[in-house]
Length: 244
Figure 1 (cartoon, helix red, strand yellow):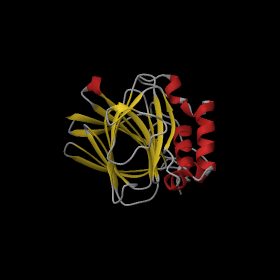
Figure 2 (figure 1 turned 60 degrees about the horizontal axis):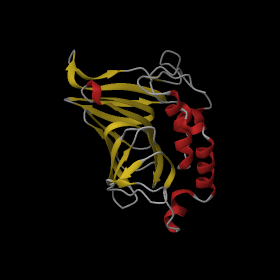
Figure 3 (figure 1 turned 90 degrees about the horizontal axis):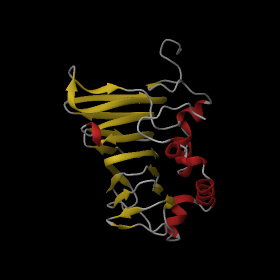
Figure 4 (figure 1 turned 120 degrees about the horizontal axis):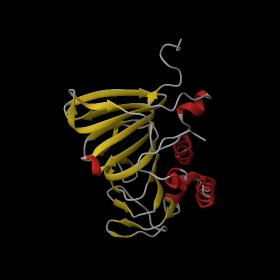
């Protein structure tokens, strides 16, 4: 189990992937063919829903499907996992998220997180985005964790758990390339000339990303490498001074 640091989140939120209900639901999802089979058979693409959530302002039923163009809101103590195309998303409690439509109905172009937190894994595809009140992140195939802190002027926390991400906040733009959790704060006002600053890894784990990746037939960078780095937000399996 990843040694993790919590900031304003409970242990139970982070350990959702250990619950029997999720393990059963995830097993059934993969055994029955994943998103493609669910679409063909007109089954729900909600892998698990615990607690109350709203879909376009109406109470969500786990038998419904979430589509691009929809808005999702989770209530206190709730938890939601869904898949659209080759994108798997886990939404934490007290979150509001809009799913933008891509080239087709079943391709996600943008996840717009207004408040709350989510983890997401994206299969290969044309550039897509995660947008928060203070951050825009252009992604291809990757796994990321995103959180908005409304009590701190809606600053955003963003972890590029693996892959390449083009990030912008305010007037600043950077490219993040990570094998193992490279983390940032995106702030509404510049600090020492920077809107994007380094952060430690908080509020998520390796196992969360691994379970989401499995739902879209993917593996994380550290699973492929067969080893992990230090869970500190620096982004490396092998630190640069040790890499050959």
